Every structure is written in C-alpha cells, then in structure tokens.
Image (cartoon, rainbow, N blue to C red; front, side):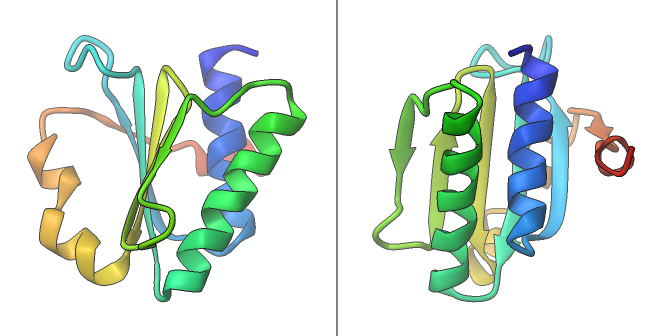
Length: 118
C-alpha cells in the first residue's frame, strides 16, 4: 500500500463514521514525523472512538498495521500512528483548543475528499 492509498483509506474511514471538518496537511519537507497529518473531530467521546475503530479496521483489512494508538480510553484526542500518515481524532472542544492547523500553518492542505468520490 502506498502512502497515498493509506491516507485515502484513513480519510474514507473517518468520513464513513461522520468525522467533521476533515483536514489533510501535507507534511513532506516540513516534519520528519510523517508525510501526512489527518485532523478531524467528533461531537462525543463515543463518536471519537467509533472513528478510531473504523480507521483501525479499514487499514487492518488492507494489511497495514497501526503502529501506535494513544488516547483511546479518554477519547478527547486520539492519535493513530500509521507510519507516514498520522491521524488526529479530536473531541470538538480539544480541536479548538489545540488548533493543530494553525500550529502547522506552513503545511499545505490537500483536498482528498474529491478523490474519494471517484
């Protein structure tokens, strides 16, 4: 699976569980951590967990392991480390507080939603 396929799988999984305001930041040349950050949020702890479970299930189904999962029990900010793709699933309140899009404001945003509809 290429990084792009992994990215699209994660975004589709989040979208399938009604994640809100999905943003993809292209981190290539900006961060050594990952090529892409996916940032989204949900309005309840249960929905945060449902989004994370769906991401894990869909990438597992395609044979790609989740390297690390942090914050699942608290369901306020869950980090899903897929290697070159890192997914941040926030509870709405925490997303506004941490504002990763502003923190990584020099990273270009990518419109991947149009690729999912093809």
